[in-house]
Length: 395
Length: 72
Image (cartoon, rainbow over all chains, first blue to last red; front, side, top):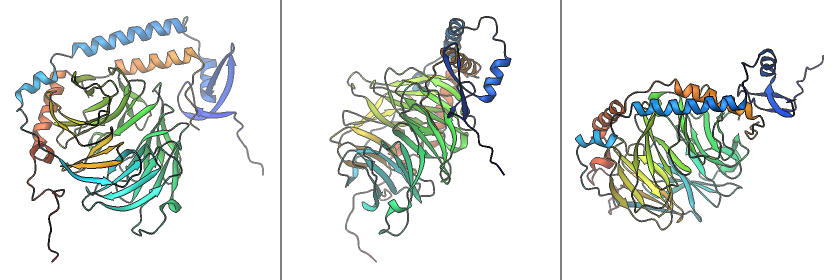
C-alpha cells in the first residue's frame, strides 16, 4: 500500500484564481508565476487576446475607474445633510462617566461587550486580557498572553469564550468557565495564524467561526474547532487595521479598513471584494456598520470620520472640524444610528449627528488617547478604552 | 499557508485590478436621495428605542451612581 503524496514547493493563494491550494512555481520569460495547477493548464490553453500587455490592461483599468467615477457622480443628486434638514434638531446631550475601570497596568488597546449587556472584555499592551462585570466593577477573569500589544479582543456571542490576538500573529480563543480559580491559559486554543500582527478579530454569528484582520494585508475566516482557514480575503495593499461584520439581517458581508486608505466590502462565502471606497486621506483605523447594514462609518488618521452608503456606493457625509487635528481611532453608532461616537488621539470623544453632520457634544475625561469605544448591545451605555490604562463607561 | 501577497507578475496584478474594476462597475447603485431618505427613516423608526439619544431616567439606568441600598 503506498500513499500518494502530493509534492508541492509552496502552498498559498493562486495568483490567478485566488484559491488557496498547492502552487506550481514556474517561470515564464524570467517572471515567476505562482498559479495552481488548474490555472497553469488554463493559461497554456488560452490564447492571449490580441496584445494583452500591461499597458493595455492599465489603459482599461484607467477607463473603468473613470467610468466608475461618472456612474457614482450621476447618482449624487443631493447631500445627506440637506435631506436631513427636515429631521428635528437633537436636544442637549448630557452623558457622563458612570464607571471607571481601573486594573490594567498599561495602555488598554481594545474592548468588546458581551451580549448580556453587562460584561466586557478588554486587552492591553502588557499582554493582559481581563473580563469585567461593568455593573459591579468586578474582574471576573484574567489571563496573560505571552505576547505584548494585544490589539484585538472579542466576546463570543454565547458569552462563553473570548478571543484575542496581537503581536503574536495569532488569534487565540479562551473558553470561560465559572470556576474563577481555573487557569484560562490551560484551555487556550490557537485558531488563526497570520504572517503579521492581528489587528482585529470578531466572532461571526456563532462561537464556531472567527474573522480576523492582520497587518499582513489580509483578512481571514477560521473554524474555531479545527483551526482551519475557511476563506481568505486579499485585496488590501497594506495593513488591514479594522473589520466589522454586517448586522445579521443583511447577510454574509463584512467591511475592512486599512493603511492603504481603502475600505472594502467583502462577501464572506466567495472571498470576493464587492465594493471599495477610497476617499480617506490617511490610514483608516476603524470601520463600523450602521445598524441597518446599509451603510458604514470609518475613522481615520486624517482627523475625519466618514459615512459611506453601500447602496449608493459612495461617501455621503464627512464629520470634521478645523479644530480637530488629531486622528480618530474608533467609531461606533448609537442603537438607532442617529449618533456617531468617535474617539480621537487628542483624548476626547466627539459625538456627531449622523444625518446632519454636526457635532452634538464632546466628552472629556480620558488622560491619553482613546483607543477603542463600543456602545453596549442594548444601547444604554458607551464604553471607551484608552492609553491611560483605564476604561470608562458613559451613560 | 498565508504567504504575503506579493505578485511578481505585473500582468497578473493588472489583470486582477481590471477584473475587480469590472465587478465594481457592474454594481447596481441607487440615488443618494433615496439612500438618504432610507437612512433617515431608519433613524426615525428606532429613535425612541435609543437610550443614549432619548436619555433614560436615573431609576432605570443600570449604571446610575451607586447609592447605599439595603439587602432584603
